[in-house]
Image 1 (tube, rainbow, N blue to C red):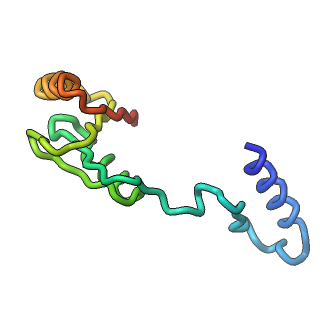
Image 2 (cartoon, rainbow, N blue to C red; image 1 turned 45 degrees about the vertical axis):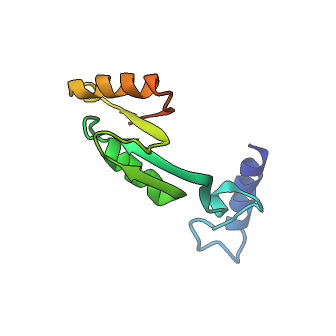
Length: 117
């Protein structure tokens, strides 16, 4: 958090100088900062987003756009999946199939990644 704090202080100070007074913000970056790097996985990841889990496909697609080497499957029986996405929202358990799929994923020791809206 120190680097983030220092970056915020530097930006606030620079915005008060004549050279940057007309700017609303500055695109400052700290070397090694995660925001300045492409994120990805060392090994390919096949993330299963069940069609019985409302919102999971959209979340999985957002993750796939942000991380390299991550692909999404919505197949009913994801034999090759490396992880299951469980998207938690008010409609999560509206389809009875999802509980069965989570039980099967746990029985198969498939890692379950949870995300909450």
